Length: 517
Image 1 (cartoon, rainbow, N blue to C red):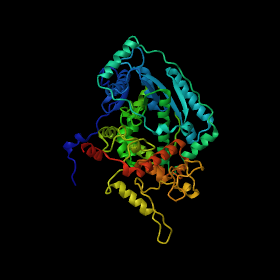
Image 2 (cartoon, one colour):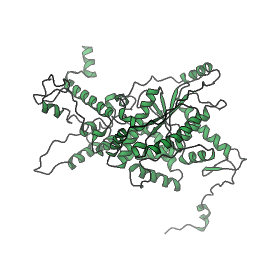
Image 3 (tube, one colour):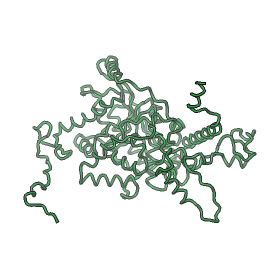
Image 4 (cartoon, helix red, strand yellow):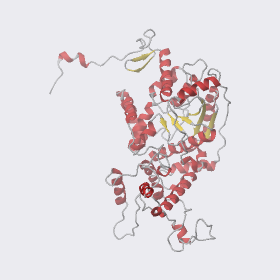
C-alpha cells in the first residue's frame, strides 16, 4: 500500500481555525467576535455592517420591491423571520444607508390548531409575538389557520399578473417617491391590532381532521405548507399587499431543494427556492433571507438581541426518519457540521437550475396544479419515468383472476370518469334541482354538469406529480376545504365541456389555413 512520506507530513496538517483572539478580517484592528467560516472572522461592528449590507444588496440587486409598495412580512416567530423583521425595521430608519422605501405590514399564521395546541398556549404565544410586533410600529395581523377552511375559490385561481416594468422605471419611481415624501421621509404607519379571536372548537376539529387524514407525516407537512401559503396569499389580497416576504434562509432552502427532489417537485424548484415566485400572478413571494445561513442568523440574533418565539410544529420532537423533510434536514445539518461548504454548494446549485416545462407565470389557468399553483409536469412522453410509475401503480392495483374488476383510469388522461354516477342513478339533472331533466340522466349517459364531490382519481388529473403523492396518502379527499373541491368541480366540468365540443373547435393551424383561403 502507498504510504505518505515524511516530507509530505507538513502538508497534511489540519488548517488552523481562526479563534476569537484573531483580528477582524475587514477592519484589521478590532478583535474578532464571531467566526462565520474558516477565514471569515468579524468584530461586532463589522459583522453587523456585513449582515445589513447583504440584506439590502439582495433587495437592490433584484429590484422587485418598488418605492411606496405595500409588502407583507410573513413572520412565524422563528429566528430567520424575526431577523428579517429586524432588518426591515433597521432599513426604514431615517439615517439608514440605502434606506428601504416600501410600506411593510406583518402577518402571523397561528397553526396551533393543526398541531393540537390548547387555546391557552396559542393565546400565550400570540401575545408574545404581538409584543414584538408592537415594538416595530408596523401594522400586523394574527390569523388562525382555521380561516383556511372558509377561503374563496379565487385563491387557487391565479389573478392576472401586472405588466412587466422596464429597467428605467425603477429609478423614476424612486425619484417620484422622494419628491412626494419630502426627501425620503416616510409617513407614519397606522397600527392595526388583530388579537387572536376565539376560534370555534368545531373549526379546529375540522382542521385537525383535515391534517390527520394524511397517513404519513411527510404528506401532513406538505399539506400544511400548502394551506399556509394559500392563507398568506388570500390575506395579502384582502389587505391590499402586492408582495409577501418569506423568511427562508439559505439552510432552509438547501433542505427544501433536496426535499423537493425527493418528493418529485423537480420541475417546481425554480419557484420553490428562487428569490421571487410569481405563480399567483398579482401576489409575488420574495425571499430576501436566502443568502443567510442558519449559523449567521443565530449569531446575529444572539449578539444584537433580536427576539424570537419558539412555536412547536408537526415535526417537533420527532425522530429523524419520521418524514422525508425531517430526514433531509438531519442529513444536511449533520453534513454541514463536518463539511462547512455543504449548504453553500447546494444553494448555489439551486440558482443554476431551470425548468424545461412551461413556467407557472405564463401557464394557462387549466394547466396549473390545483394545490401548489405551479405548471403541471404530468404531460410526459410514453417512455418517461412518470409513465412507468403510472404503469407500475396500475399493475399493483390489478385484482387477481376471477375477482370482479373495474377499469382503472390513468391519471392525467381523458379516460378518467367525469360523469356523475349518482345523478345518472337517480335520473335527475344536477343543474335543474329535480324539476327538469337534461335528457342524459334517463339514458344512462350521465348529467350535463356534476354536483358530486370529486373523487381521488378526478383530483389527480388536476395536480402535479408531487401533489398527487400527497393526495394518494390521504384517507379521503372529502376532508379538503370547500374552495379546493369547488374549484376542482369547475375545472372538471370545463374539461368535460371542452371534450364535448372539441371536434367543433379550430386549432391555430386550421384557422390560419382558412384565412389564406
